[in-house]
Image 1 (cartoon, rainbow, N blue to C red):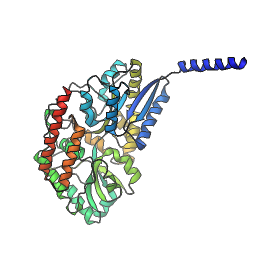
Image 2 (image 1 turned 60 degrees about the vertical axis):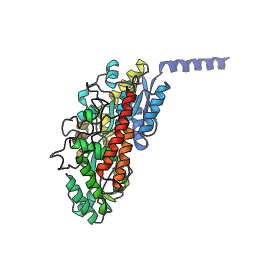
Image 3 (image 1 turned 30 degrees about the vertical axis):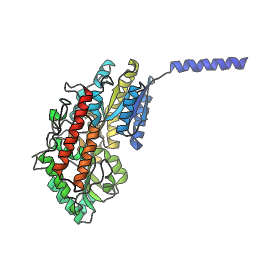
Image 4 (image 1 turned 180 degrees about the vertical axis):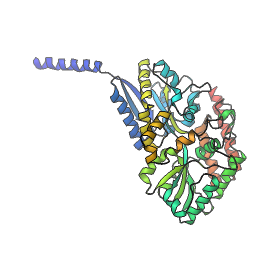
Length: 433
């Protein structure tokens, strides 16, 4: 009898304890695998340890495209998360998903959570605002392309750090002459050589302020200035001054293995450089094409933001708002920036990194911040907001690969990419109505 009473009492105690300490769970779907996925797990666990009311549960859902697709399907089935990480080119798609998103600025206001848009870097936050200035999603892992270079190889070759495209060609020649297999490679070529080349030189990539002012936009990146630059790069293939190594980060080993002395790609490869490169490396600003502009404008971001999805309970959104405050705090953002190479999304996080001596100990790691903050963004350098741009990037990749293979001139490749891309824009425009 005593044992039976004890068993019932223990069950009742466990049940009451469960009620007393029940936590509101917040699902966060993300696209960060490997080491960055472990860092996301740490951020969630650290937040959970600061309080007992809410529990953030991060779930890896595959790459960026797979994560966004999974979230869309889950929303239709009403089994969606509270928060999803979406890459920057999915912004227009998320905006067009009527009733699916809970604008981040509105969420913070409704939850009564203090929120200051002025704390964020202008070049980061402007990408994700409506024309009226409302913030749609929370900046998280933002990066921008930089020019990485092998310091040891440059010293051996007697090459100067490039500031212009003419300098890049001269440095590439010296590197190859000194015995390197190639001078330059790059990755994410649409982002680096079309999107950022245009912004860096204050060139329009598409009408309607690069899509920000309306989905009825058309591509204009098939212009003489972009074509001339790409034709010149294609000519550098002769003698291996330039070597194409793939669409995304596939060409990273060309640099970290010491094959190419220069590599243009995301600042967020810093962690990879630290772990893989067996030589002294550094980063510098993107080169200027002096035939196009007399000075650079600003680069634009890549990476992703965090979107809140509609359809959950108010208490859950209160917890989500508190997590957003934690995630964007100077301490968390400085740690994330220093670990990964993603830019700190707030000025306070950048200042904290500076005061901690990170930039002094790791020269050049503030290059991305300087590029993004070089000038106030213009309609041409604010970013891009084109519908179906995930598919458009595939089109641009195909056409640029035809250029590198010698099957098309730059003008032919760009004209074909613009024509095919415009067809995808019209499909998106019709679906968004």
